[in-house]
Amino acid sequence: MKYIRLTKEQFEALHEEFARFLATQSITADEWAKLKVEKPEVAEAELDIFSDLVWEGVLRNVEYLEKIDPNQLFLFRIDESEMKLIALKVKDTSRDITSTDDFQWLLKNYSADSVEIFRSSKGYSEDKYAEIFEMLKMGSAISKGEWYRYFEGVIG
Image: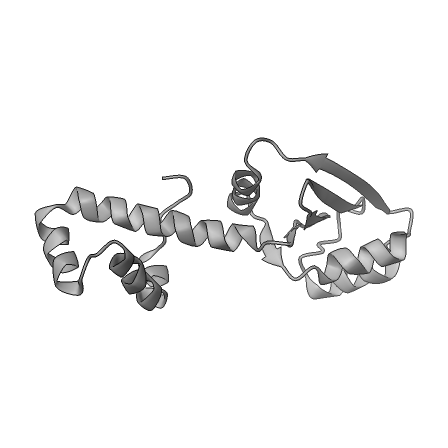
């Protein structure tokens, strides 16, 4: 398994897609029920393969990630050959930009001396999607890129 198995809730939400996946494996609903009982290791392998396929589809479509900590905001753009970063660090530790009020403060005061802005980019290792997945595991969230585009526009 390359990523992680989907949760029970995720499988339930994707039950139609899973049924189509089983059909591509020539496994009927009755055969699936029998397989789970008689060959649980084969059933487990099918769950893992489906999970990896779902994750690959999700990761292939990621364009932006963001991670917000109390004093730092990390905004990533996922390009074809590299990942771009805009990071903002609030030096005033009494601020917590995970709160709405302090995030609004950051939007108005990003150019203040109490905020540091960094830009960076890096190429991917051998597996772009594994890198994106690791970032998700470390707390990044998939986003539509509004904040990345906003800060890219205001900081140039």
